[in-house]
Length: 123
Image (cartoon, rainbow, N blue to C red):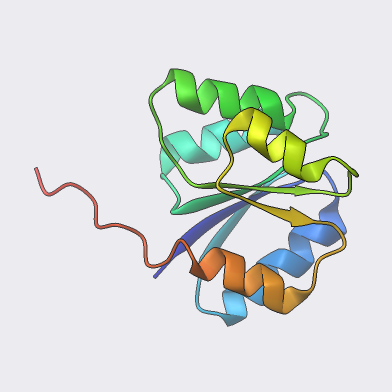
């Protein structure tokens, strides 16, 4: 089962994305800001992080920088309504971008690109 972390300060977006991915048999966790996202990642590493860029407390740039500093090479999909979404995705080294508003089939296809999760190290 794929573990997906959805990070967005908009509760409606979090709910819709979580519902769609749950129907696709993903295990979905959500976070309303970057600080909450980092705590969730610390507790259980997801297969992919769907990351909004503009959020309170800690934005997407800070989250990506923190993950890279810690050596966590998680696939990141930028979710943003900004006109320069692709440029922002490139800035943080994201693996993909979903420009809001996106189609739900585009969401599923993008998450599926990173599925299934690689198996955890068996050490």
